[in-house]
Image (tube, rainbow, N blue to C red; front, top):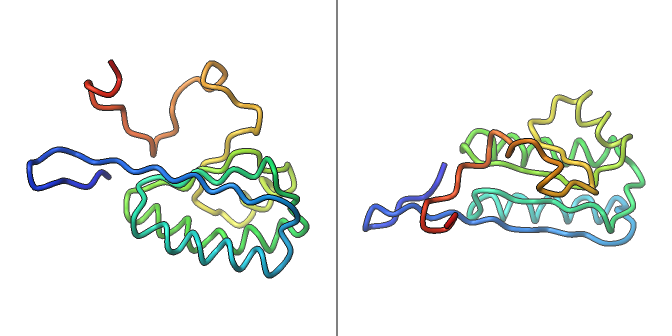
Length: 126
């Protein structure tokens, strides 16, 4: 899941993507393209939808399917925070391999990290 450096240390890169405003068709395409680009360099992409207005949940679920599948195949993770209920239903219906957390989730409310999030190395956790 993590990239190894020449010294054998593991690197971990998380990217936060936070679209704002209405996610119309052009914005959904742009978001899909951005996720495709981020998949090449990020171990985890957190897609924060709390500032977005999802106009067409089915179209967004379809746009997220390919990037989410790519992340899953590479042992990486696409994590969505703040997805509206209709989008969550569409993601489930389309079997998109994505981790979804509620928009108001705080670490104390989340019982455990999603399976795609590895434990932090000891020097970072301390």
